[in-house]
Image 1 (cartoon, rainbow, N blue to C red):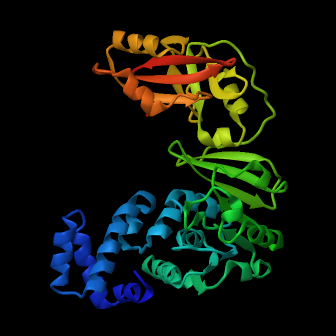
Image 2 (cartoon, helix red, strand yellow; image 1 turned 135 degrees about the horizontal axis):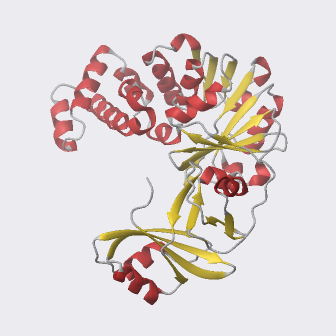
Length: 385
């Protein structure tokens, strides 16, 4: 879809074609295209069907808003989940913000809804047009100005805050190297240094050496899945983990978790706490200890629940052996397993095949290194929701 095809979607005729395409979502693609081609040309038919499909996929991130928004494939993939963007926007509420690489506008929309006046900059003209259309579709076009331009030419000094979400995809696919971001990492850092206040969205696995010493690094988890890291400046430095949708937040307390023997329960800390190096704080919450000083599994004897970790009751433990594990699972009539591992080189999918299970019950098996020895822990029943 090019810019002309997208702009045609915004016309009355294009809107009619899009509405018809939405009604055909889920039907046979060839039949849907054939039906639309009776009324519309090939270009408009393709644009309408593509947009209808993207709206359906976008529901997971944007909820009901997706039904009236517009997307590009890469823009949807890169965009922030609605709840996560809203959480970030609260910290910049009411400010005049420049969004230096706005994409389809998801973050700019969240900022506008938080009372910000937003100037959104996007290098790609088509993506910029999509962002502009989204602001208008959601009724906040008066608070969002979209400009086609290079992030490197943004003047953050002219605004109260800078927001930047550099693209993490190259022609070869997703990249985990900040130097390959677009705009490149040195450009992003230079913009942040010039800004009065900034929020930089990065991949949750960003190498720690890239985090500025003066920034607060916040890892955000949504329903148990780590979605992003946000680097806030100026800040007190340090680390923070946040759980959404509940909004719980965890910061360092200086506690150091002890290492000790396996207890009745094992807790798997949320990924945001692990990335923020706050496993010790989670261990203190449950009165637990580490199974191994280098492995983020906590153990203890008290049945303590916390949103910061999944709890598993340990029913069996043994040194890792495929033969022994298979026999143990068969004795419990286990036919379905959830496999978790830390510090283990075992290929999970190969192990699942090799177990050759056939029972009607479920279990969680945890592969872990305990004091440099491979062990397997068995927790009977379904994993916690």
